Image (cartoon, rainbow, N blue to C red):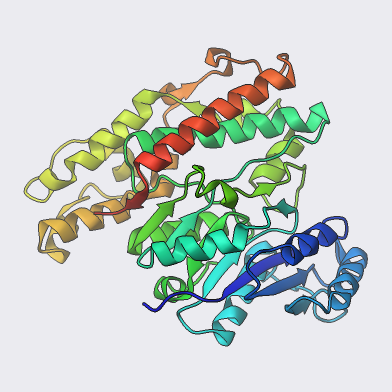
Length: 386
C-alpha cells in the first residue's frame, strides 16, 4: 500500500446553519491542506430543515476558498422521498461519491457538522494512517463538551459515561468488538470500505454496523490520547435531537428519567460471561460445549445446532474461531446483556448520582472513565478477530 497523501472529509448536514461556519473555520485552520470536503445537505422533500438547509447551501457555496463538493438532497425535488432517507443514506451518498473520485489509497474521515476538532486533526489522521497502513478503520477518541445547561449536561454525561463504561469492560476482556462507533469519530481507507461492501444506510446506527463490518474483515484500531494522539480527539456537541432513533441526541432529549432503563450500566459478571464464551471457541471446534451465551444464542438464532454448521464450513481451527466471532458479534453481545436483567447495575450503585450531584462531580466521573478508556485503548492498541 503506497503512502496516503490525500483525505476526503464526509459531512452530512441537516439544519446546521449555526454550526457550519465553525466547521468551515476549523477546516481553514488545518495544518494539512490536501483534503476535499464532501457535504450532503439533506432533508425529506419539503420536510423538516428545508428552509434552514437552503441557507446552509448558500453558506457552502460562498466558501469558494475551500475545496468543497456539495451533494444537494434538499432543494425542491431533490429531497428524500419514500424509505430512502436520513443520515444513513446521506453518509452512503457521501462515501459513494468519494469512491467515484478516488482510488483505494484515499482516507475517508467521517465527521458531523456539530463536531469541533483541532487544527492538527487531519495531519494527525494522515500520519496515523501511514503508520498503520494495514488497519481497516480507526475509532477516534471523542469528548462531548459541556454546554452550561444542566438539563442537557446531566443526560449527556450520563449517556457518555454509559458508553465509556461499556467500552472499558469490552476492552478489559480484549473483545474484538471493543469500539465506540460515532459517525463523527470514524476514519478508514477506501480499500477497506470497498472490501466490506460499503455502509448499510439505516435510519440510525449505520456507523455501528459499518465499524462491525470492519472488525469482521480486518483490524479496527483504537486510537488513544497520549501526546501523539491527543490531537485527534473530536468534540461533538451533546445536544438534544430527535433526528435519529437512538444515540446521543435522542438520549439527551429523553432526559434522565428513562436513561437507566434504556442505557443501563452492565455488571462485570455480564462481561465475564462474554469472555468465557469467546475463550471456549477453540474447544468448540472439536466438540459442543455449554457456554454462558449458549441458551441466548439458541433462542436468538432459532437453532439448537449452533456450531456444527460452522465446523462443516470452516475446516481449520483458525477459520472456525473467526466464524464463531463473526456469529457472536457486537450486536449479539449487546442483546445478550440487555436480555439478562441480572446483569443490569442500578444507577444507585454508581459512585455518582446523575440526578442530584453537581455537574462538576459528574464531569469528574466522566473524566475518570475517559482516562481509564485511554489507558486500555493503549494497552489493546488494536482489535481484531483472530
